[in-house]
Length: 272
Image (cartoon, rainbow, N blue to C red):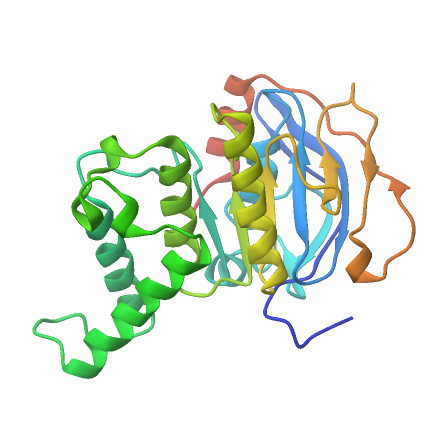
């Protein structure tokens, strides 16, 4: 296995999450090298969001075994959380409509300093300010979000962003502090065909840079690793050619559940 890339390898065997209302998902197998784009597909209520949260240590796996970046789940959930990030997950990480793009970016940068044990007291020295600006600029460049193209630049409120721009901002916040795995929900929700292609290309580019990306949505690139959570789908795991893995193999289907059941499972298993 390639250990020189910054992404997290993912290995899951028959994993599932069961709550008081039943299974959010179950019987999911994943085998992915670092830097893989994993596309989670399935009907509404089939547990796609729960799977993203489970793989990032934010929901407790109740069946099967899994490792992310070599860390076993659920035993090392806290460490997995610290090495992963989530973006665009409604009800878990939401953009604040009244805040500006710049305010979101600054807040995330400040949080990063705090988590890394650095002083967040103001005024900062020149070195800290330069490091923060470089981190913000790198995140914006990674998702191809150009502030100059926004109506009011960094002072543009989230409520005034186009959907694709809001998605790019969410992902920028997620990658700002260099996670080894990024989970993105509802990648192509209410996007045009052209915007869906843009969104998936953004995530594909991030994966090519080395971050393992797990994204829920349809229309994924042909070289993505497909994981299906709906039992009505023909579940086939497709491994990207660059990983050098074996030919496509069947994966077990997930068990359907309603959105309410998924929410109950989320509450039961816990979230960080």
